[in-house]
Length: 259
Image (tube, rainbow, N blue to C red):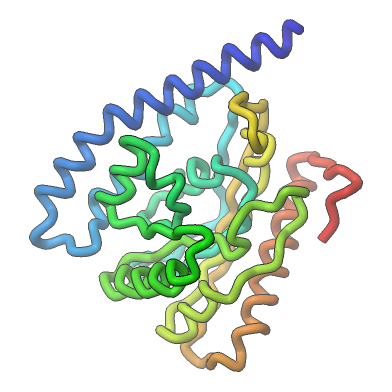
């Protein structure tokens, strides 16, 4: 009972911190976007500031410990199609600790959240409407526009997070986008965010989460025929690195989880 009460109190504190940070950052992000509008077509500066919304709330949350590892490419404005496994809403908070800006392909439900969603629209994140067959192609076309503006894009190729903890199949959209436009893939492996926030539960969990940056994969010499091999190669890399992170963190997966 005592442990559950502590978790509930810490969760209320965690949501308060995050909400307060979002409210405080909204006018700042809007101001930066307004000032930089004439010369920053890709909204890089406003987006970079927006990702910092999560830094203080994460650091002051007694239930969470966030880590980053690996090295980002020297020039993220090249740009890259960034892909990662999807464990939780907290993935967005964790990956935003990386010192760069990239536009997120995000569910419309997230982008409808007051203030948070408004900022996502301001910084030109890309909306995906689930159940709308026209939304996927439209969203990928918007991703191409962001890449043309020299800003990397972030996509979860699983689509939605796994219900079991197993790594879902990767959809082809991100890899088609990379191959068609000659942009390299930048894989990320995420571990621990599932324990930070369980599905359908407002209470946060005590967990250490880490995102690891892997080596970029060039696509300039590839064609559509190479797409399945590229997709499977990236999925294998992320799966193996996630397993390494689990081992390093002493995590034991439930018996139902297997890749």
